[in-house]
Length: 590
Image (cartoon, rainbow, N blue to C red):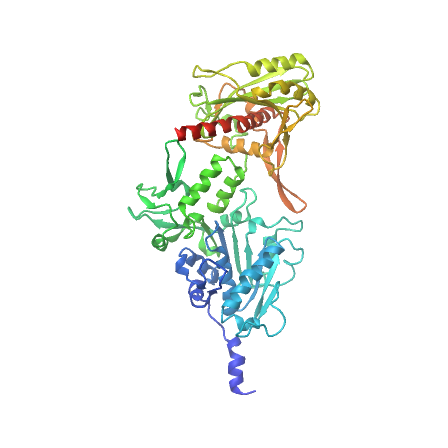
């Protein structure tokens, strides 16, 4: 073999390459293929300035683990592809990319990685492509893509074998909060264990956060040196990390928010930082990552990046999503907004004061609640074997609500005498604290005990015009708040309620600490037993058949006040909310 052959074939692979900042390297070598992103062509880090420090942390020899807790549409996938490209060309190494499912791993392999390889003149020959993009031999394997010095292994977090046995230097885990639960251990820990033999290992974890109790990305971010992106105010120069609390908008004549007036205001001087369009490029360029807490010398860096920084999403569009989810009282859409747009975990915990009776204060438990803003009265009726319990609740604008009273009628629910008392109570006027005399506009009566079901149907049949209806609770966090009614044998409507979601709505509102939209007013006169019952349950995440599901666990024998609150809220959703919508529309036309 001639010296020239040794020079061209052997020494390029023998040469030790020094690490290069990933942002610098990607600007020189990375190519985005057509159809693989909104802006094909040469990669430009300056297009997303906040990505520079994150990318450079990946190739920093002093950093072993990078955690990116992010919203959507911020360049997270491109960060993964840049990392793959770097450790294929500049520091050839075994690479493991873990996706939540086999389907997602297959899709990113064919749609993103293969497209990246074909678009890059430097990558093509490493994977056997000729200049005309024809493969010399075989096919570009979907699960294992080999190149000189390493390979790209695409794995599913659900696979029992993909995360075992193979030593890997570079570990990339995408959307870790959607990884399925495994009976043999934590999928992220199993993937990272593949790199334990490498002193220069690299771990990159990315995800939008899930629920607070189970968020893998949020937990690992908390164990890192935590960074936030601070941008100086163009008016006073004070730097701040952008948050949803800084976003403001005006209300129209009907009180509804107007997304077209969306803007971000400086918390220091009140000046307008940006308007309702995408994040301005000059502002993004002026920002820098600031250490929030932790020690960077630990080798684990965490970056929190909400969607407010996206150069593609408009601020007015985010306000539209927020207002729409709140107007529809859609917990799923609100949860998606908090997680995907704000990059914050969804808090499913019960009210923080559930077991803190001694810390009650006049600020939270009101001696004389103000009923001036109360517009509707509803009742929730819970039927037990020896009694009927009724809670009356009041509702105002923007889902502000008041617990008004709780009454117990003792007796056999099969007796006509007991139901006569219930009827008189539901049809009697209710006097509010501001001196008004109102009526219970609607009521929902529990019919699911199996003992008095037919009695409840018979009772509700002649009262349908008074909006007094039978309901049956259905568990599950994906069940609609209220389903369309069916008809009973007595021709009365029967509504099925998503009781788990209604409980979550109530608990979310009980955690609101400022009087206003969604706040629940609690009168001090109601007994301690009532509040113990109202907060007698909490959501818990369990694993069934490899999937995480939420179940509500009861912590004490009595929870009738919570059930009554659920039925009273359902009555509002069924009959009062549509009326308030019509009133708003008629006022707007007027």
